[in-house]
Amino acid sequence: MGWFADLPPEREPSRQTGFSGNRLDRLSERRLDADFVVALRQRADARFALFCGDRPLIAIDAHGGLDALHGLELALALGADPAEMALLGLETDGEAAGAPRFAALLDRPVEAIEAEAIAVGAPVKAIDLRSLVVQGVLPADVMGLLAQARSITHWHASHRFCSKCGTASQLAQAGYRRDCPACGAQHFPRTDPVAIMLTVYGDRCLLGRQPHFPEGMYSCLAGFIEPGETAEAAVRRETMEESGIRVGRVAYHASQPWPFPASLMLGFLAEAVSTEIRRDETELEDVRWFPRAEVAAMLAKAHPHGLFVPPGTAVAQVLIRHFVQSGG
Ligand SMILES: [Zn+2]
Image (cartoon, rainbow, N blue to C red; front, side):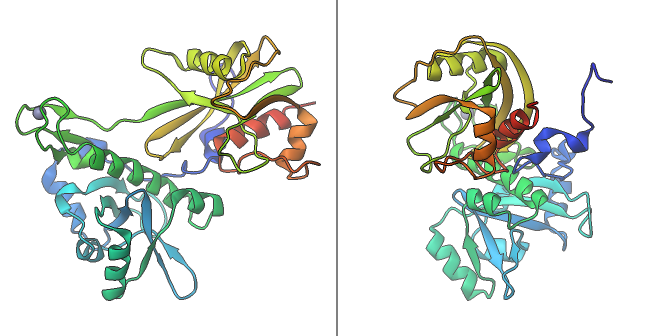
């Protein structure tokens, strides 16, 4: 099978990334059955991921345990609209196997939501998804579920009106479509592909830093794939624009759902065919070639000048680790 794929599913590099652990059966073929979806929502074991803007509400118990899933009663008490809830799917594993999971957006100020949750005896905190994934305080499958919930609730919140005629649209197909009652247009959720690439020349790789990065952090170059462009062409274009480096061969390595708000990071290894850097001064504060040994020190947080790479859950680090580990 070497010609087809090198690794079995459980060892795919994508599995190393944060937000990749979603195990739900999305039931995509059942979404048109509205009665079935309502019955799922009313089941005693149904749980809801509740979002306040881009942050999930997290219950924290007396022992510091975190729970990102809530009952229907709390969802309704905090103002969730049943007509705007999206079905995420059914759990497929563990004690909760078969239990339905939904997502809902609470379109109100966080202070009001947190105060009301205390009033009904179920305190919650709105916590940023990035800090949850970096801290690793929730199981990987829950982080995957939250990524799905965040992207879908964001899409509904930002597509309330038909883009053809401006009429208020309605959630359909259990949350995977919005229909316009005036002109009949159907609108579907979008996922925005981003190419992220580690460009390699012999024993060196190209890393850059954006002005907003934490001090000392260097990462892979990246950019949105544009309409009418292949992923490989986007890798070559972005690398050229940001660094002036020409790329030859491109190989896909791993992907990562990136719910900020609805991207899919597609990670590539790219082979440089030139070495002279011409930095894009508006995008990057610095971009340079790093020898493999120096990148190994950055990965190990043992760099003499304190330079480092993004956290282990980031597809950027998955690409960088692959480069370091593949060196002789
Ligand atoms: Zn319309």
